[in-house]
Length: 320
Image (cartoon, rainbow, N blue to C red; front, side, top):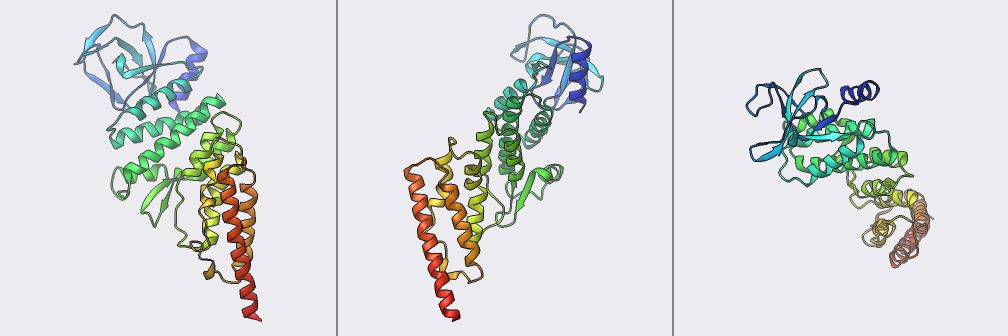
């Protein structure tokens, strides 16, 4: 919160230039020199206030820039070489955070501490955003970065620094026992989409959520499969039935066959709920624009329903 407080203080007090650090572990030095004593090291996105106007351009280790005299959020002062900084407008900081997120995403070979540092930055920036459109983009950037970070962790979640990261952000992630991996908690993405539904990033947020893996596995149980599709492509259709990915959202429903649904394994107690789930899926599918994919999904669900109804009749006859 020091970053937000400092931004607000600058807005109300003066018009000093503001910067944020553009990398992890950047050094604030006691003098304007590459060998100046280290005052402190700062994480990415630390907000810094200019104390005085920068001097002339110089070259340091092959990079052109200026030495900026700055004040950190904790009051420490020193000098930092400008290539490690990005100017930020306190009135609309989201633009700088988004540009930095895109810049870092394009950089290959980031260490895990750098990934964790950037996630902390994006999470904080998204929570402090004021402009709805820009904040929605920040939320999407945050979730995408978290997804990539979790993929980098893979099945090593019991090791440090991964274990500490997962503990710190336990409200953002969920563990899948069958996969042995951690996933982005989709509820958070859907909640962000709900908040920003009317923005241009509402639909991209919804599609990102729809494509995220869910924990657990259905092991061939039809009710589970229908429920999962309802929470993924189905939920997308509930919110954006005419969206850019409406056809893609139908894919799960097009892949049902009587054989892979294990209809013959259904018990008579299961069948009424399964029929209800299929009918709800059909209703969702019909909200999508007419297309070959929609027709294929409707046909698959119709065949599936007919097979389940037949199984219901068979179960009833056996009981009699």
